[in-house]
Figure 1 (cartoon, rainbow, N blue to C red):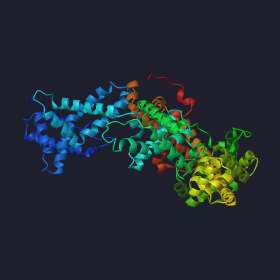
Figure 2: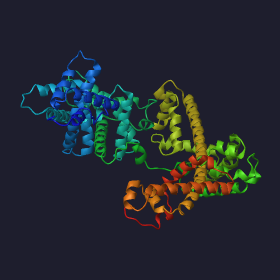
Figure 3: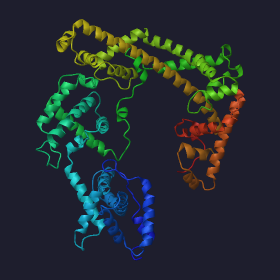
Figure 4: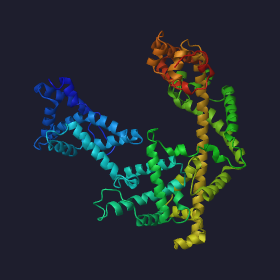
Length: 614
């Protein structure tokens, strides 16, 4: 065969490099690729004398035969896509290098061209254009590259700043919300914080449909191929919608404060949003992780800042933790004095062996079966013996810190929230977030009262004039009822914080008990160097084998794991008289979990002794 070996021909028409697009025309299932290969193998057997161009002509004829079944046309289409795909991928990578931020540009170009190739009608237009030229024209792959290049350049010329801001599908709530989240993330990356982010996003919510209706869908604009500059009327309409709707129940609390916005403010905000989106695109090559930038760009605040103010110490947590740990030790020393069906000799084993955390060796049901009680007995033992005294101790510490009871604290907290943070709640404080949820659950007319009273700082008399159908006494009663509900939400959240903190403290304490046993056992392993390379430094076994060619790396790692597992088995039986042999798989999983945390453990032993080159 003069045009390559049979296998090369088969590969040309069955390997798809880019099968899907993140938007636009959907790709085909990867499971179709083996079927493409089988079909090509049969075709090559039938026509061994054919060249690549012959197969192109054959598939081209198939997709133009309307009488054929849809499945046959689909497969012919995919064979042609496969023929063009490798060349397309190479062309896109080379072409993207001519633009700033080539990685992000390359991904964008892949999307554009994938949407074209996987659209059968679009591909037919390209091939038809190639066939309509003279015999001296370039081959199909080169012609296709030129056609795709023109499509890319046309799209670049078509896009504008307002395309970047307003190219949103208004018919899909999910897509619109995703675009809103993308804008929020971009604004946080730009260094903009609340309440401005909520102001900008709320304005954008109304600007996009107004702009698209006036500039894209309007009869006078339909023939325009570009995203034109907005006009003053667009900003004026957006400002009007913003001011009318900012007191609605679904509007963010941040937009209910301050005076009315103007068209000039909306224009400035939208330009700021465009700049944030452009800068966000430039960062794509550094990180494609789009997880909640709000978390990264808000200052992290300890949840227990809830209890702190100017007159209280910021070291509250540092003070209460030692006190709770001392209480935990007192509990451990007096286990024989409590009432429980758990035998005395097994009581000290409950928390180290089966309190749930990452390194737990048993679950409660397994422990209960081993010591001859039911699971409920173990659960009550943990709750009554450990959690209840620790919560009592913490209640006492909190009351001392607050210097008053929780009712007074909740009243003061809600008062401060409404007067100082209503329009910009602290997203890092759990109580603030709980109050926001409580406000969002109120009836719309009650939310409006709050927004007028604390967002606009209206007096009761002004609210009466604004609403017209409410008396001052009625408004006062409703506001007092709302405050009472918010105070209850604050107390409930604080109580939940206490429970969560106690649970985390117990988890950390008994997780450390298991970790200490493994640290001791690890120090006695001969292959510590290999284990540190594998787990502390995250080296693959192949690389370790190259660095230490005389060592059997895989065998050394397996033996070390077995030693760590055996150490836990011996510790459990020797300390508590409980055999964990039937649960070896769970012990193995706990060891693996601990090893995978070696890189973040602050252990001098892990970084002493052996030296090696990396």
